[in-house]
Length: 375
Image (cartoon, rainbow, N blue to C red):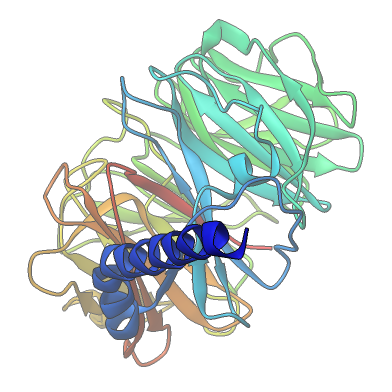
C-alpha cells in the first residue's frame, strides 16, 4: 500500500510545485508594476469587507461587452481592490452590457449608483457595498445623477428633467416642473438645489418645495462648492460664481474654452478644496482627452494664467477627470492612455496645495474610469 501511495504523493507534490511556479510567473508583471505604481488586488468572491477607510473609483465598463463596477483604494492597505460591487453581490447586476455606470455618490451612509442608458439605480451600504435596494426602471430609461436633499428626500436627474425620490423606499415621484430637458449634475447650497440642464442652463429650485426660483444662463461644467460658500460652474469661456444667499451671479473670463458636455454627459470636471479657497477645472475635449488641470485661487484671476498640473506624457483625462479628497487634502485624477480610449487606466494622487504627485496606481483593462467617490 505504501509503495502505491508514494508515486501518488510525489505526483501531487510536483503538481502543486508546477502550479505555484505558473502562478508566480502569471503574477510577476503585476507585482512588478505594483511595486512601482501601487498595489492591485485581484477580485475575490463574496468576502464581506469594510470599505470605510479609503475611496472608490466608479468605472463605466466596456460598452457592448460588460457592465461597469467600482474599485476601492484602501488607505491602510495601500492597495486597489477591483470590482468591489460584484465581490459583495455576486448575483447582482449594474445594468447590462449596453448601459454605463456614470455616477455614484455617498449620502447618509448609503452609496447611490446611477446607471446611464438603461438603469438601474442601485443602493448599497457605503461601508460593505452590500446592496440594500434598487430602482430597476428609471425615468426615460436614462438616469444621470442623484443628490440627497435630506433624510427622506432625494432628487434624480434624467433625460427629460428632475424627479423626486422618497427615501429610503426609493419611490420615484412625478417630474418636477421647475426644470426641463436633459439634466445632469446637481448641488445643494443654502436653501436651494442648483441643477444643470441642457435646455434651461443653471436653475435654482427651492430645496423644500422644488419650486423654480431663478435661472442663471447656460453652463458646461457644474458644480463645485467653494470654501467661500459660493457655487461655481463654467460656461464656454467663463468661470461663473453664484452666491447662494443673494443669488447674485458674477463671471470671470477663462484663458481657455470649455466644451459642451451634452454630447456624452459625464459628471462635471470641476471640483473645489475645503481647506483652501481654490477651485480646480479640468481642461479637456468634452468627456475625455486633455492633459491640463487649472487652479483658480478665489479672488486672484492671475492664478488661472498657467496650468496647476500637467499630466505625465502619454496620459489623458477621462470621465470627470479630477475630484478633491477632503480627508487627505489631495486631488485624485483619473486618466487613460489615449485621448478618448485606452486600456491602461491610472489613478494619480496629487497634493492639492503643492501639485506634487504622491502616488500613481495602474489597472489594465477596458474599464473607462468615470469618477472618484469619497465618504
